[in-house]
Image 1 (tube, rainbow, N blue to C red):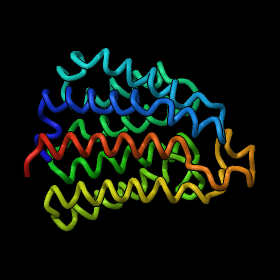
Image 2: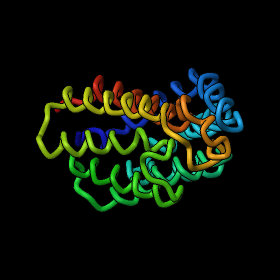
Image 3: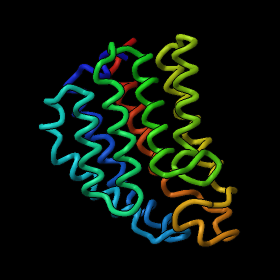
Length: 216
């Protein structure tokens, strides 16, 4: 995983892959948000990740930790609603966490743990409340377990993908208690959370890039 946080080329590929998946699924995200929110999640995420894509050359030239902080700031400034502050907090906390650490798998796990903690703090939320944490928390568990058990990269990525998809589906029967979806009460039950969906899409895109470009 060391290449993940030292390769300028890989940083650029990750930016392109995440922006492309949000662009391709913007309508899906909008539809999910129309069901239980205000319907702007797809548009807002597309705006934010398009801005990151536009800054790709600048971001790829930075140290990876600095690039994460900068990308987080872009999301905060460009993405409306709750998504910008939450995703921005995730990236900025990860970047700050990784700034003075040795680049290895354990560092990536620690960075992600700090990022998830920042999302919890910013959103005043925990897993089980029908938010993006339904995906982020199980992904963190899979990543941490893979690091602790020194899993082969392919196995680790497969488990992370499965954790993300399982977490997304687990959001469907939950009662929303945060954000606009909470106003619906029981009517929020039976719908996928749009933030969980965008998180799952991003995790999958990142795993695909790492699988192609990073060797153990």
